[in-house]
Length: 147
Image (cartoon, rainbow, N blue to C red):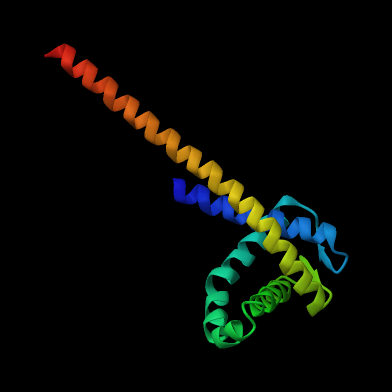
């Protein structure tokens, strides 16, 4: 259950980050402005980042090292352009420079939302651990009274 919730939140984070980026940058547009569009874009963006980005990052590793990691911004822009190409009716990016700027903004927004998600997930985990501990203590008290 928790894995499904984390997956859904990851898709939502991608969709929200892209939606905020589209609001901030005139060179990136999302149509239509419905929650299903953002879910679809978030899902496709998550799949592209999970499947294609690691391969591109692996083969571009020497260039990434040579540019001290700045080439990762170019890879982010290329992933955004790829999603735009895969979903031409929902996402439009006017060019590479808009994609580069969009990748930077999406990285910042996604990082902030991701850290919020981690804090919430951590508090859920701590709450679950406390709940299990209380149940064990309660069960031991009940068992000791029965003996």
